[in-house]
Length: 475
Ligand code: 5AD
Ligand code: SF4
Image 1 (cartoon, protein in one colour):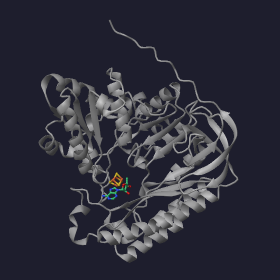
Image 2 (spheres, rainbow, N blue to C red):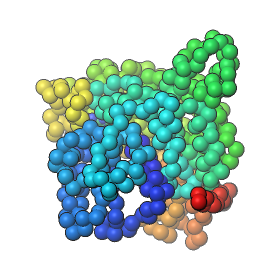
Image 3 (cartoon, rainbow, N blue to C red):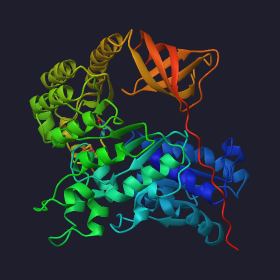
Image 4 (cartoon, rainbow, N blue to C red):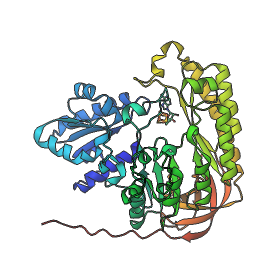
């Protein structure tokens, strides 16, 4: 989400006539986009600000802006500790980035934080704004902002506010527009995508569907006579997946407590939706899951995962796991190891619990886990995950997979890197690299922990042509 915000800020500044600089020393404007979900975000921010202060001492015309959820949370502290900052803005007013910088140029430092998104405001939704994409063929599309859950470790509900879904027709229209612009792959973004649309369906009025209802909640459900509130994510996957010219759809993240069969069936039946499910486990212990307020048990999680694997052929599964949550015992942790092994993940993001000020778990200081014990658990969990990744990767040797070319490999430019439907990176030697964005068939020849090695079979589809934009000038 935050990375997407950075692209939006870059896009807005681009649209305002700025160009990307090679380094801070060449820049007129520096925007630090913060994320308090990251560990140590505040220390890192003040580290960067220290460096920027010395640049600004030399070049006072440099403008410094701080964006993102840490800015939102710590606005006063930032102004106090870093008076060299010109603009502070939050997650709900990213669309004002260029104006705020302009205001600061003439009127001095500006702090503007909007506390919540406005339901009717299309600008509240990140992707309704210009975006400078890092790659031309892939784009993120926000379908929902905020989160109505209350996981005890998580700062998101406090900083991103209540869950709000973007109208169905807007999402489909944006994807259609992106495809016309040369995009072939989209990733739908939300904190809890399975509840996408529930809030939209409660906004429908009357017994007879009208055109506005269809725009809000999609065509299929609106005709349902009972008009009960309902999640629309499965419908959205089907509809987005059917946009002509789109090759691949991914999404993140579902919540295990809300992941239902209709979404798995939509994934299986929609050719463009990739066989990859990121299903955050967080812990394998029921006691800890309850303390985290996750709303499921390990058994329920594994059942849902098994159902998804039955419905979706050749499914890759990834997850997020936290070790050392307050009160976690050795026994709790052993359960996490068991569940992780049983789930057979393709890969996992693993975290050592760290308190985020203002969250429920951060107050449980008397049950914090000893850092050495947490570090030790982390290493043991990594070993289990890496073993599982290796097994999953080795099982793919000999298969031919269709992958999207991302460009030369960072480590060895003689190879190109491509991404499979299962979201795995595959490095392929080739004297002449296929164009970025094209689809290639590659045979998997070797498996590593982080990626696969392949050989090129053939190029199956070229990179799409990008629509040329003709600038329009108002006179
Ligand atoms: N400590 C450690 N990990 C956390 N995450 C979120 N908050 C914390 C925290 N306080 C992890 C969760 C989440 C992922 C995005 O970050 O696993 O799914
Ligand atoms: Fe945070 Fe839980 Fe919401 Fe995910 S579902 S954003 S972990 S509160």
